[in-house]
Length: 204
Image (tube, rainbow, N blue to C red; front, side, top):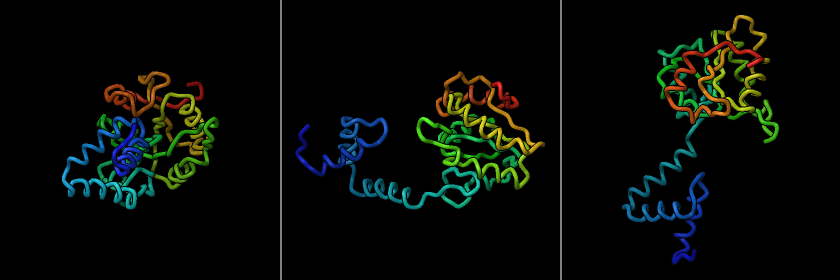
């Protein structure tokens, strides 16, 4: 496609780099921005720049945060004795949307996947073990996707936490189908899977 403006083409190129955005959609977004007044576009651009420069990761749970410690970790109403282990920020949003979980989280930042070159040391597993070692955590819920990578990660974490004899380790009930990812599971099914969680077993 030939563009009459190199500035337009450059903007389309940048938008089309976003996941799931083709060039036609990118062009539609850019043309929409051109219809807005300059102040609105400046605010849009500033929000993205500020996000990239100022966003943090919670030093406790590694969730995306505006502060050094996120609002969930500092909320006195949350059950600090229960920690839900998830793959990413999207999974936190999905679980929060169920309103069925009132504990804290631990975001791994991915799943163990040798095929993709992701080793346990690339994830926030060591910090989870240290968090349990510091005391106060009574249950760890492994809320990872029911995929081969999720199951591999579950097993690795279970082995690492076995030394804590009084710690309860549980997983989501199989209301989630095998192969399902947490962030794409509907709220009712995910909520029931949390409420009806079961003890972790190597045979699962």
